[in-house]
Image 1: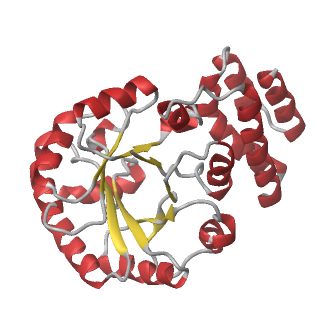
Image 2 (image 1 turned 120 degrees about the vertical axis):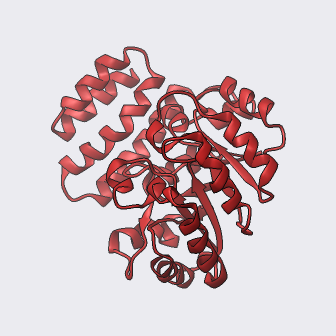
Length: 304
């Protein structure tokens, strides 16, 4: 089984990716938080993609947009940086993204999606994969989308079997993933609600044919989850603390202001506190803290 770390905006940049690679080296492929398809890459994005910042990992840039020409302009820039594959995001459910007909918002018109994929795959010098949801409001939308995806030689199709308006609530619509297995003949990757070894076993029992899994929130809550799936013991506090400390040091090296360091780490602790008792107490304190010394004191108490 191949395991992928799902991209999460503002969290899974190169600092966090490298910490996973050093302390939980079970992930086969990482995806960048989505990059806007545009004429020119920002310095921040170039830094996140730089080879020297991603030495021990297999990284795939993920792009978001709604125009084939803009996707292709960015793909050519990625080729110049040495990348061999790219992922297109048709799965982000964020309202601000969807309102611009990007992410899951682009799924509203399967014919337009089909035309875009046809042009991108015909002209792209890189292998192309897609991450998708299964529709906007109605699971019946998946039939037309599934038919569209089935026409193209994608490198792989990563399916989060929820609708856009499901966001992350309720349970994944497993029947839509089953339909994809019947109709689409490229490698399929399952993504959605794998937060424990038991969750993993349920998904693989339901779909024994799949050979790749993408995990997002579950790996942020428990960085050692894939290790546990592979039969290793749960991560102890010493490893979690070393993992955290590497992220902290990376943020200190990257951000100029201490408040930016604290803000970035607050995002991570929203998930990571689930590995500790008294989660709500510590999460409340972390959310309220305003200075780096205060933050370090709280973290010391958590690990103690």
